[in-house]
Length: 248
Image (cartoon, rainbow, N blue to C red; front, side):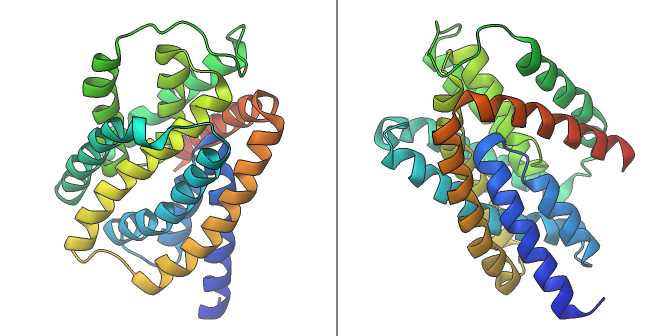
């Protein structure tokens, strides 16, 4: 396979990941294996994926905010906690093997898929909050943010589950808020990988442009179809990620 063909395939993978991630999360399970197959070492693959992922999650966040689905200013303190969680996770990724997470993750994703597939009453309408804002911000958000920095794939699904199951948001609103926190934790871990010199900048930036286009298309599709699209796609993405991890 020629270098040019590998580059084109990585760009295509980033576009697909941006589209999927903007709706249901899980884009990293497309791009990280693609980067590894292209010959990058695991840490460089994670770091380069964080760079390209910033473009996709950032673009999706802006698209949702412009449609009034997320108040960026009000959510900034929560995003700051996610950012710090991403930093902690990124530091752990550099020094720790993620074997334990890789073993546990498929079963967590299957559980999330079952929840969204069979939970009655899931729609774009908000429901009652189950935990306090302080508990959500200071415990749930940093844990998911640290996971994003340490491993990554499935982060959007975990944020979605937290917003829907714990905060009581409707599916579309949860998706919009997920993208901002995903961007924040991504940014935190990206800073760590950049400082460690574990990023292929040219490749990551090129993939980032493709991720922007995919994320814009994904966000527009999510806004148009709402829970009718987000819910089944989230189930499918979680199951595909789980199978992919179990077979790897």
